[in-house]
Length: 333
Image (cartoon, rainbow, N blue to C red; front, side):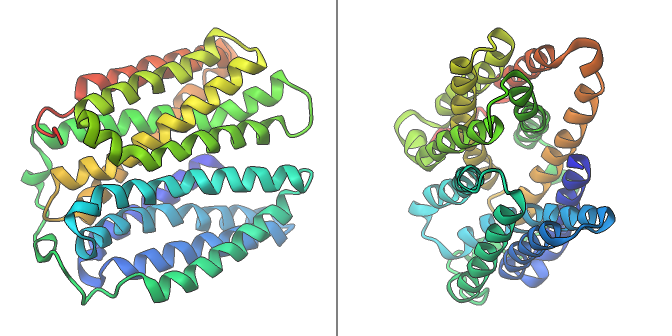
């Protein structure tokens, strides 16, 4: 099911890449929130497997439709001095949502249907809020962000290749961790909602993404990204090194911290590489990352019966550290 969701994510990103310049970011942000809410609600109330699968695919399109248009909307409507902080806050919203959903799941004693219904209601309320408070596209403060074509030559240079290689490696490693870590935890520990507690810890750690802009300002982009990648790789390696509950919690917390920091760095990095076409540039980054999210669980998951979970996490941690070789040399601040 996760592969279908990632494929839906990819479809959403492709639609944005080709249509955002024509319709602007706001319709895609609203449609992404709407599809995510409809998908959650439908999946939670149906007993039909086909409808459930289609609902999950619909919900899976949500981040692909809405994430990169947020980058474009920030470029259009937010002062330059606040753009990096804004992008970091937007990316960290996923962590806040994960923690809230995990806590709600625990409080409801594992009733995932009720949890998803509540999540869908919150989504519809957010869509109404976004309709009135996300600026309309005729308000453009940074006119340089539009009316530029993203040609093939602009996609192939040292800066974009580094970004795309980092994106595909991030896609492979984060999708593998999200796909198998919770199942791994549930196999190791038999107490109730162990996987939800793990997600709650991970989501709590992810709130660190709020400080991505501050870290960049203090240490510079290259140093901040390097430290994040090192800790990110270590957080995955921990699942190979030890299977005690305390180490599992350390892994989840550190992964949440670095996953959201890295997720906040990507739109910032992309906005520097694609200054004149932020939505299209970030959509192309998401396309590359989504290819990694499909490849990672599919390829590594096929080896579980032969090498076991912990060796998959070892391979993922090594791949995560390879990103150190693709840190941009031109982005300092």
